[in-house]
Amino acid sequence: MKRIALYILFCISMACTLPAEAQMFQRAGKFIRTALNGDSVSAAADSVIPVEERLRRDSARMQELEQQVRDMMMTEALLREEIDNARNINSTADSLRLVAQRQRIDSLRAQTPGVPVVVEGDTLLTLYANRGGYSAADRAAMTSEIILKISKDRRAKADSVATFDNETYVDLMYGDKVIITVTDQDALWAGSTRRELAREYVPVIEGKIKELQEGHSLREILTRAALFVLVLVVQYLLFKLTNYLFRKLRRYIVHFRRQRLKPVIIRDYELLNTRQLGRILIFFSNILRYIVILIQLMFSVPILFAIFPQTEKLALTIFAYILEPIKMVFGSIVDYIPNLFIILVIWFCIRYLIKGLRYLASEIEHDKLKINGFYPDWARPSFNIIRFLLYAFMIAMIYPYLPGSNSGVFQGISVFVGLIVSLGSSTVIGNIIAGLVITYMRPFKIGDRIKLNDTTGNVIEKTPFVTRLRTPKNEVVTIPNSFIMSSHTVNYSASARQFGLIIHTTVTIGYDAPWRLVHQLLINAARSTPGVLEHPKPFVLETELQDYYPCYQINAYIKDADRIGDIMSALLQNIQDTFNDAGIEIMSPRFVATRDGSASTIPTDQMRDE
Image 1 (cartoon, rainbow, N blue to C red):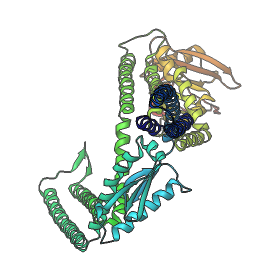
Image 2: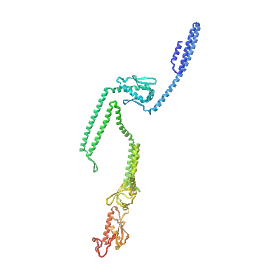
Image 3: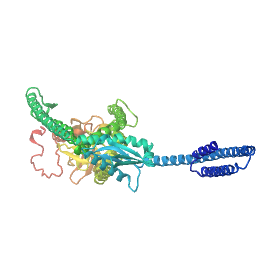
Image 4: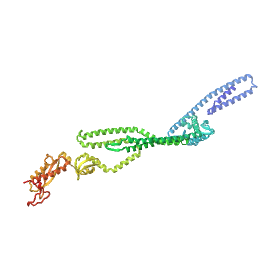
């Protein structure tokens, strides 16, 4: 019986608190009570029942108890199977719940930066989860405050941080002060367990407390003060050394200017003399001195602030203010290198294409390359137009790769400049278009003698905006191209080159002179004039028969339109000499004389001897 009772107690000790285990516990208790009751009844009857009968009954009772034990063992096996199934179900549910929480935390981690626990500029750890009505920011602030309080206690020992494990959280404690509580949620955010995370936090917090205690010691303060003074002394010596070196550099520049420096001369023009060059070199040396001093301050000032923990964060901020623009500039330059390479490729392609077109234009302009229907004087303006279009195309291709091209400010300035140009350049654009039209109309070219309204002169310059003429009196007249387009133009040189320019003048001779003789005299005077062509021959036209005289017009061909004035003057002189030699008076426009023996109008030194 004792063996059966011990076995039953062992089965009870293996049971747990689940419903199936409680049922087994109830059955085992009932069995024990039954066995005890049976033992008490059999003990009372032993006094009256013979020994053989008592042995038979004990044997039957033993068999019955053994059968009940076997039944209970089978029940125990079934109950254990039910317990294992329930545990597996609960474990699976907990695993799924943890997986779901991890997935949710992973999705939130990219959007939630977390709250760092910062102690005097040093980030110890990062909190994400709330606890007990306190947000992550509140927990971080309280943790920082507690660490600072502990570090200010000179009796505190940095290695006295301990962990206290509860069922759902772990406390990091220093004495009776809770520094931080690590929960399962914190562990999930860290991808660990709360015990492992707490063990990771312990050395971090202990190291910071030790560092703060060392920083607050008198020896450390004196050391930092000495270092501060040392940095100031070194910076002062650097200032003195820098000024000394640049004073020597200035004296060297003055000596170099007097002994070796030569003026900058472009052709025959002295752009910069030695004195000006020396002043420029001294100016740049001063700029370099300021830059060197500024670089020294860039390093010394952050070092001074970094000496003391209270200003260490300010030192980092100042250094970031200095370093960030430099990093941004260099980073922008490095990032811009691919775009710069593309711009250089485009520029080189356009440049060498323009060089090829310039060569072709030069060949056409000098009549080395002839293209049917394309005149040599079109080569230069056509090249300028194509070059302008190519540059415009190059700018359009380069524009997206320029820094700041996507900026709204850059685009706004571009639109504003375009608007100003469009509003203020209507006349200018009109002159440019007129200049292009004039170029391809070819009414004149450089060097031609033309007449534009009342202005006569030689073309000395053609630009996209204006055309300049030099008159026979050496007056330079500037005429807008739009005015030329709206006026008529007479080109003397073009006619002279192609057909021969006809010059003419009218002479009136009295009716007493035979007209045939007058014709011949005028033709002789034209032939004897330098610059008048032999072929085609000069000819005379009678234009009017007035009351007192007929009008004779002499016409002669010339090739040199630039000498119209000289040739016309010589022709008029020859006409006078020819008619005087022939004894014929030129009575133009009207001459009244009484032939009563008065003297002739012919000059005495030119009268024929009769």
